[in-house]
Image 1 (cartoon, rainbow, N blue to C red):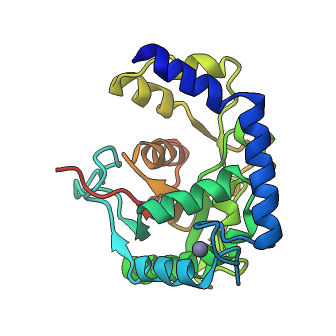
Image 2: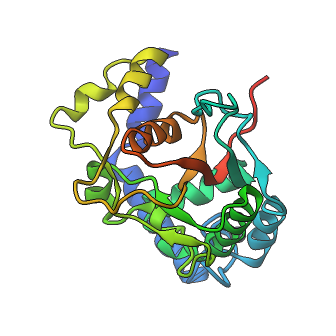
Amino acid sequence: MHSLLQIVDALATSPTAKQIAIAWRGMSNLVIPNPCVLCAWDDAVQHQLCSRCTQLLKDQHAQVIQAQDFADALPLNMVTGLALPVFASSYYTPEMSKLLLRFKDHQRIKAAGFLRPIVYRTLQHAAETMGYPYYRLMPIPASGASMRKRGYNPVDAMLPRTIPPMLLYDGATLKTRWHLLSRSSHAGTGAQSRRDSSRKKFRVALRYRRPAEPVILVDDVLTTGATLAAATRTLESDGFDVVGAVVVSTVTPRN
Ligand SMILES: [Zn+2]
């Protein structure tokens, strides 16, 4: 069994297999000059998505989800003991997962155009629900390695060009920490070591603007909430008040 897997693996990664894949892609591109990011079957009509996939995804974004009960590592409010409110545009469905992966790792950046109006609506809903007059909107920054690989922060790319008027965009305050030994930060696999490394994940820029408005964080996917917790801890230790977060997708609660 083991050797069979090795043979399959060797075949799949062989130069011949790669050439076939390239040739196949070339051929399908002749038939479909602009294939849909999701199904790769139909012609994309807008935002690199075909009309069928667009409708499918739209149905999955029908309403904003309150997701803070789904993630157990979110920061708790010191006074109320309640988890940080998180507003999600959609569940992390197979289609959403595929769209976000394509968008993040295959340079299909135009697919962000599909997400932006949805993110806008979620931001507006979050701002209105929490009831403050103004907020500062801070995207979770990409790591240095990810920025070098992609050349952009996917979370930033998903934000609408114009955000709701009660939000003030601030992409300069929250930064990732420099990691001289970035490999070692992934050495531990236990929950505790992950928590330890995520605690040191972010920093506040040296020349940040003084904390004033309450902060809404933005990220792509909510899984455990550890990233939002790490960002919140870093910001709050510098005097910021993090009141909520907006994510494009949330995983479903574990039973
Ligand atoms: Zn499609």
